[in-house]
Image (cartoon, rainbow over all chains, first blue to last red):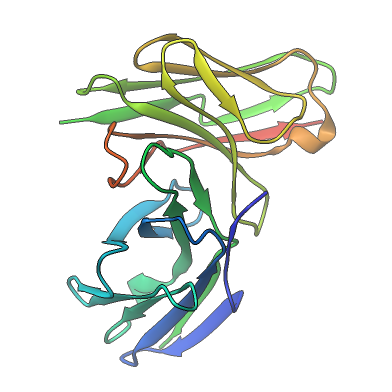
Length: 113
Length: 113
């Protein structure tokens, strides 16, 4: 089954506000984490990743935070735009030589105009 | 550049009929290959992954099988489809490095009637 889960299934955000999407993972040996965005009827698209030797990584309007102590991952989207409406998944890969990539259930983000 | 092709995009099949979904990757060699299934409103369930020709790891015992006859070809099959096999099937690839993101195909929407 899926080893990565999410705290909230849906998130409604006012346009221009910041969004925070949370994810809990269960495999303490996981050393690589990825956030994906999926629009309706399409395959997931890569947003940002982080390795286990980091606790924060920033991209364009997005920041990923990793707390290994409590096995928690979050994605922050700054100044949320209508185009950010989608389902967001976190994924994890196990330790070295473990190529299994597991996904959580996803959070549906809806941006209100 | 690397590309991943998955077909068909949509498929309607009767219960008890066979299934063959094909996925090919271009522009890379020795990719890790994955098959996922996504039920409506749910996350991505890992079905199979492969780290080399003829090497298949099965994550969920069910009515499906996978094969990798060539380095960049991954096939998902069933001898007799069930209604519960309906879903959105996604193929993905990663490089052989553990800490790289997966790239997804556009998916196949399978409806078993």
